[in-house]
Length: 599
Image (cartoon, rainbow, N blue to C red; front, side, top):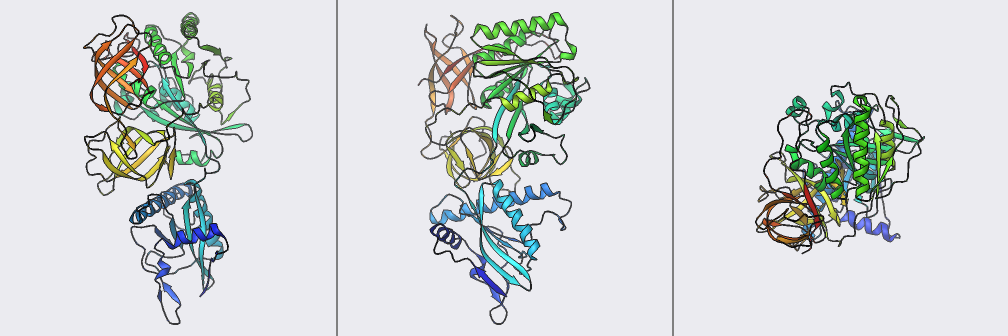
């Protein structure tokens, strides 16, 4: 057996990497030999820790069960992320918290036997390792190559890179809102599958999460879908209509150097007011698509209520008139008139996009002359998910909409929790989903979670950004985070935060100046519900001044940083609705006042 091991002492950077690798428990430090010191095996692979044995990393041409190439690459990437997390845990013993890297022993069986790979197999396995590392923003460094009977064994260090990964996608968050039966889920289904609807909701079925949503036709929860756009031969649409695309991971893989669009579908019926507001406030969309049905009749009041709420929140807005195939000209003219008047009354500039005739969806966006869109511009377009009117135009708009930079932050990391998921009993930690308000979050970070009477110390074990395993989240990105330990985390809820020590300030009282507050609308003692970022909290009005300054006392302690937008809505119990049918009146639960946290 011949050996060649890197000896990069003349290169300071390489020397640093060598020291990094030496700090990890390489199995080559203690090998089993047979005569003349010829290695025959390493110690068996440890279950925990930063060392991974791989007999090979081939994606095809080698038996790997029923896994497809993309699924195997995804699973291998997740496994690499686990070893990187283990390296962070390993570094705790010497006072670190950042992942140091993972050692991969390629051509080695789980029991430590040196199996070896041919030169061609090793080349393909290393190419797979480079792909895995690139997905996680890591680099690969070869530290040992051993030759055994014309076969090769390689030791490689996979180390997180401190620089921004090449080809990182631009990410646009969009929330769809509007009255029940306005066709939000149907439109989302057509955008993500390039399939026209049959007029009975065929394209929306895959978008719904619960059986009662399928039965009633009403969305009751926030669901998410992912779209991709790539600038190749014009602009290509990456969705489930493409061969080989069946998951978000596939969309990530095919959207290199393009744009990802995260679409959140929200409930429309007033009885699901909390879900609706969550999609607008908690999800912090860059843009909001307000879907209004072209055949609305008695729903006009509800349409106007949605428009008023979006304008009060000062959202960057696109008006999408849906169900154009059902439109009657006088009714459509009245809806457009209401929309344009409402926009102009608050100084917003409507931009009516040219109507498109019926057309079958395609996987490419045709060239279009779109108006310049600013933060005060509100594009208005007409669509039909049944005939295909305006679908290509909407794709073009999603590709071109500007992404506003996040507001200046203090630099202190703060992750707002929107959802909490339990893991299997044999898995460590819990999963929290949300948005990183400020700072950067990395695997291995030691943080506190709360508010609790005593904040809980946790460690970040894993991160996913739009379901893709990543080593970190940056400011304004959405994702899921695995934190441990689980002890004492049974009561983690939406509205809590992850932050570094010392814990952020909490408050039980605050003041806000509410825009457009009418005299007598709020009085001392009134009960209200307050929405701030991911927080939804009950409160009592303790003071109301003539200039709109209102002081409130929360029922419990919450994290509400000064300057955050606050939506205050009357706590009137259930929304005022009279049934479940289409067209029934009711706008209760959508009226509120907006201000910012002052102190």
